[in-house]
Image: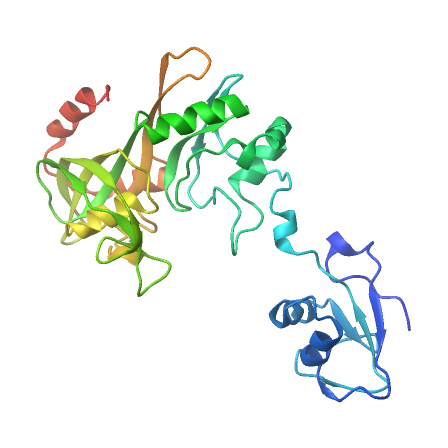
Length: 334
């Protein structure tokens, strides 16, 4: 059999498996035969190898449905389980707002997943942190103590030592970490208030969280203040809302604002409307305060919304800008 390069440059130096099919092989689809030969791998994973050119039949690329049987020879490049590479350093770019020997404050970009998981085993903030700060390999979860959704931008703190991580986690548990967000929500909301409704998985839609008969619900408290109102496009009412979290549940602000009839712009998972130029949920973590684990002194950081959210803000015809200025002055302290 002639030599053939592996399908992916990352594995081109790896030795492939050579699997001649014996005379007693029952002729069947390539993926089914391969599943019988390599029972340690799922059939869906094997299908992926075939589709990416990682399986040859008699030296030639083949499809999943190709029939193979006695006398055929298979060449297989085994791809590593993506989960096995989940904690590998990668040059993933992200802005650093400030750092000390104990912590790093990151301004997470839109679209960047924080932690590896199903469907996102590489290219995460965690991978980028391990690349830029190799010492984080010795800290659990590369120092990550809280998360932001993929399409939510803004400030996060990362611990550089086990001691700092323990201190920051305890502050989060004690609800003493100050986290303020700016949100653009549909509809006109006035005044301020607190949403105190436990959040858990939506029993009907697993990717959603819910406050209506949720599964495994946990306490969730969001304080909000309507800052200014306006109109986007021809007739889309919008309110800029500042939110302060006491708890940090998955999708908390998104779920809570939707529960009072004001889903975030473009947050289609929770009923938000896509109105140009909003192309993702309009939520940004703009202010972060915590006690420095080394000194015990409070430290505060701010980050303005990224360009895509600022473009939406600029496109809104605001009715009451003065009120927004007053609120921004008042919320400099938690």
